[in-house]
Amino acid sequence: MKVGSVISIIDSKGIQRDYEYKYRQVVLPTDTRFIYESVLHRVVFITCDGLFDENRSLYFFEEVEKKAENDYTVSKV
Image 1 (cartoon, rainbow, N blue to C red):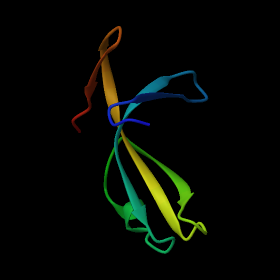
Image 2 (cartoon, rainbow, N blue to C red):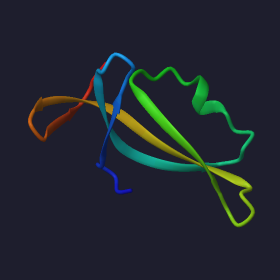
Image 3 (tube, rainbow, N blue to C red):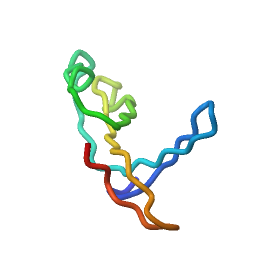
Image 4 (cartoon, rainbow, N blue to C red):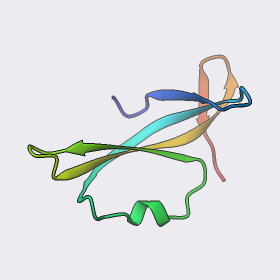
């Protein structure tokens, strides 16, 4: 995935929210600081990383507002 890629998530009410990929961070499995950060409108995907899955890759996305078809702007909250 490339920085700037946009994903869409549709909730149970049919509302679609779009998120832009910002960055990746590799951490130890015990590093849970990102869970307690006070950040609104963010999605984090967590996957295993390393030769023996000894690390975790965190993929950070921020919500974007759709202004017009195919025109996205990062939300400022």
